[in-house]
Image (cartoon, rainbow, N blue to C red):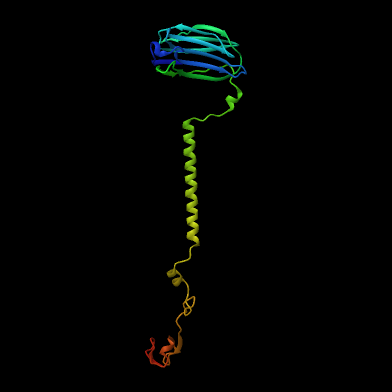
Length: 240
């Protein structure tokens, strides 16, 4: 893990327990197993790298003087041993501080933290480039899916769009059904349906036939003209 100390206390303000930025590994074992590597500022010793290995209620602690305000911290477990490495500033190579007996149990937590050693202490630190490697990844960690903020946001947008489309479709179908079931307007009913005094189909006008006395041609005329004098369009004779 890369670190950079932007601000830390001087002298007594750092406190006896030290103000520190640290990287820790906690194992999943019945008895507490904790390995911690820190860059700290102490009231008596000044700036240091510190190592702490705790098994149960107690464990060894060691401090190593440094003037570096940036660098990298590295914890490496091999079998049942833990190794503490540091790289000061922009150094490419790590330096081994020490190696201690530890435990081969599964890793439960990897912690990145900062703490102050007193009420007057302030710490401003930046952590970046955290890398975790293992020969074997636990099965449940590989099979359990993880969702980031972007994935959750995308899923929410998709759900909202589907809901909007479904609502629009439902409203459209409902509106079409209402229009189909609505009765015809009064004007259309009056125009389309026959009244009591009107037959469904218009009857053809009634006509009658008369024969011309001059040329014998049959003439078609309306009943209301019966008894009146008519002129034959063929011979010009007057027909009654």
